[in-house]
Image 1 (cartoon, rainbow, N blue to C red):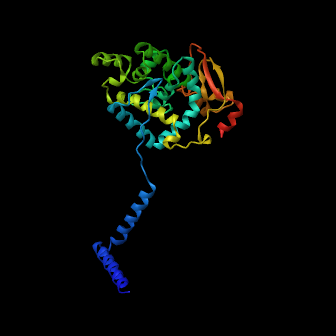
Image 2: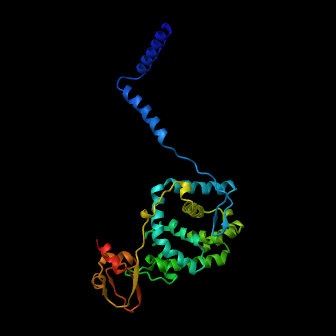
Image 3: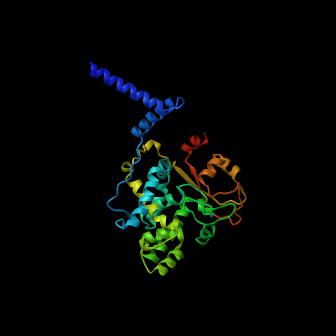
Length: 313
């Protein structure tokens, strides 16, 4: 009994000493912080990612056994896995737009892995870079014109997904023919064929992974590898994406427009859709009018009649 009393007195004294260590205004807050921290640590974990057995792009393997190669890849895979909201939207948009991109790649004998290049270029959105590159494939205005795309105040085919994907394929095939490497072709999409050629010559190598490159280009292939790895192993990296969550491209029809001096708001009314739908499905139409003095034949894409009422809501 005496031992129990002594033990209780000891605990009481220790508790008095502990609380005396804290100022009166701090006692509740400090205890609360300790509990809060314990709760946080019990629920929140950030894990490093395991090393894959191998990494390849378009059938060409990256030498991840080299420390610098692994570290560069490791950085990009962690950034994209832990920027969950951004990567989740990649999955959502890919379901909508990959079915348009993939057949064009296949038709041009470009490896299917290049669909991921559109993700690292634009996130599958019609964005404009600070330098002025535009569309899913981020063509500069001058490059687009050189490759036969129409770019002016009324029409900008960089925003036409089918046309710009075709032009990207043509570029990639030219780059592959030049470098005999799909990895090098992908890298040149960022820095240009001349840029890659110059650095290969300066540095006496013919291997992308041996090149010393500017920061953006140095990261480019590793971002591509990381996105491919995440897409092909979603559950491994903790992404749970239900089919019902994915964006879908509706059934569409194509109409030929060859008239001149077209008011696009009136034209959309004549098609039974509103102006917003016309511009959403044809973002390459950049103005409210289409002058078209040469009566060029443009392909207009619209949702099928069964879809129109849904899009009007």
